[in-house]
Image (cartoon, rainbow, N blue to C red; front, side, top):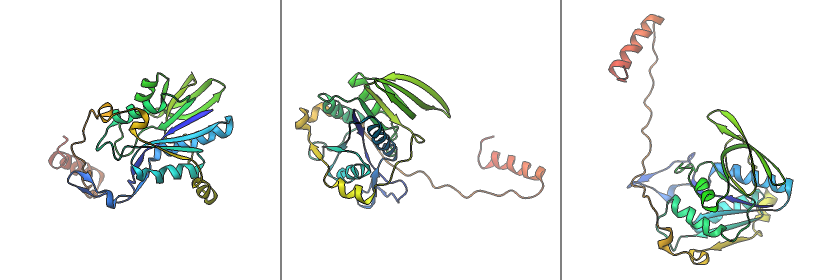
Length: 257
């Protein structure tokens, strides 16, 4: 079974993020595997262990993304590929990423491609579905369970707090939602083995792409932090007095009445 995982390097939202001139300060930011992609890596490993084959993790980015690829290898992936755009592209968007991945998969026989539901930095959720469209394969998003039986696949997906059950077939692209599994932590033996696992590095030329072929279609004009939350108020007194004060505050301060 040929299993591929789309992985993205994102900043860690649990750490302090500094915004300067409408951009994130890279020097002070901590970077990790996009958390939703960790579900994809874990599920890919589970599918390989159950059905055989190998797991290849693919990312489009800069040289620094090697660290996150090595983490995925330490988790148990077999191979990784870095499509390095550092010297070819100053900026890109979802269109750029999909065009590059489409060229990468052109000569691949992928049985299943797994990706995170969204990336926590931009949260567009576009790359997986757009890639499936370009590859002309089925796409199921926000999956919380997957069972493969030969060419047949049974999937459960999250639908606004409910569950939808879907039957489909391979080849297939899915995006992974929280609740699908519990991603493992890389073990010390896994970290040591990861250093010897294949990490292939490609550039646009290797995919027969020119910079004009992947020119972005959208631009991020500004990045900013959400406003700090104001302290709440505790209403005191009898319940009828609290209701009157609450109504007054909603009219005069919140201005929602």
